[in-house]
Amino acid sequence: MRGHRWATLVAAVTLALGGLLGIGAAPAAADPVGGTLRNVYSDGQFCNSYGSEGVQAGLWSWYYCEYRQYGPSAPGFYFLWSFTY
Image 1 (cartoon, rainbow, N blue to C red):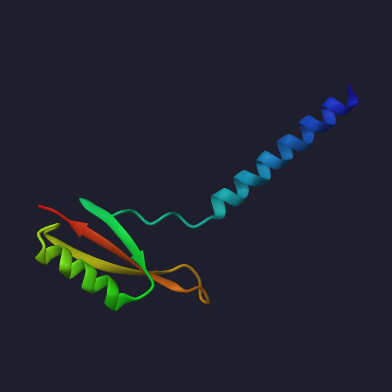
Image 2 (tube, one colour):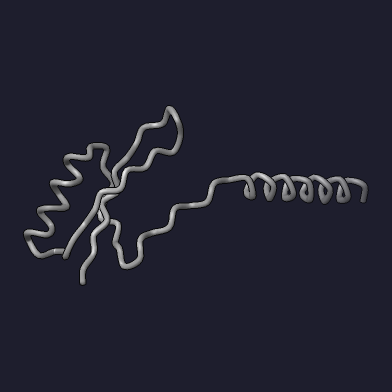
């Protein structure tokens, strides 16, 4: 019986700490309204080139490449968002 109580206590503490860590996390970035994420690139010029080709080919009406960096020393990435109207 004593082992069961100990396991319950450990589980409760683990869940509580997990909740505190989750509360302190940064919120996820929201997708733009009506946008579709097409791909993620490490090069901005390539992202814009591919987005422009999609517009010229009629795959989407317009696009933009959003730059995101998730830390001061982390690499940044370009997110290609396309829109069809």
